[in-house]
Structure formats: C-alpha cells, structure tokens
Amino acid sequence: MFVFGNFITGFAYILDMLLNIYFWIILIRAVLSWIQPNPYNPLVRTIHKLVDPVTYRISRIIPTRIGMIDFAPFILMILIVFLQRFLIRSLFDLGARMN
Image 1 (cartoon, helix red, strand yellow):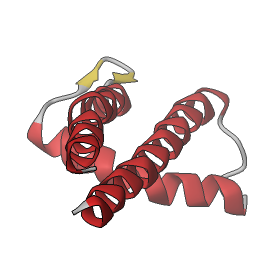
Image 2 (cartoon, one colour):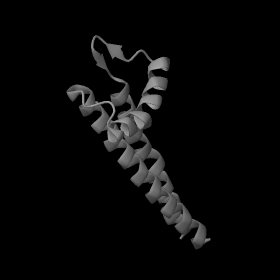
Image 3 (cartoon, rainbow, N blue to C red):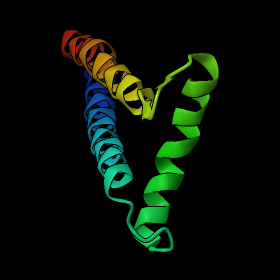
Image 4 (tube, rainbow, N blue to C red):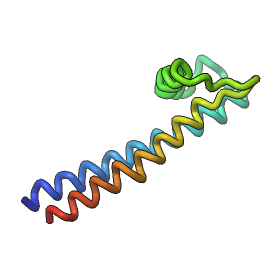
C-alpha cells in the first residue's frame, strides 16, 4: 500500500509544480497586457496560447470586464490557489496516510 501512497504524493508534487508554473505564466500574461510587446514574438504568442483560452471560458461564464480592466486572469489565479490549498494538500495527506 505504501507504493500507492508514494505515487499519490509524487503526483501531488508534480501537479503542484505545474499549477505554480501556470500561475506565473498568468501573471506574466497580465503584465504583458500592460506593456503591449511585439505580438509576433514566439514567447509572447506561446504565453497568449496558454492563458487566453482559459480566461476566455471564464469570461463566457462570468462577466469579468469592468471598464478597461479584465478580471478573468485574477479569477483564474484565485482558482489555482484554491486548487493548491485544497486539492494538492488533500492528495499529500492521502499519500501520507497510505505510508
């Protein structure tokens, strides 16, 4: 049973790292929207492709634009923090109990 517990702990660790990286990508996307970089830059295009589809879906469900400010990235960041605090910690606890 300890093997399954180690698997869950490892999965939780990798998922936590991926969510943390995605959080920073969202933050970089928000900063890029303020400075208007070259839209043909491959790095800028990659960041847009990673973040914009998710924020678009949030904007379709909840009206997130107030004036010139779009709160969809902020809502997505709050969702990531919730997942890290609830789901990841629950997986770590589950893995620790199986050891």
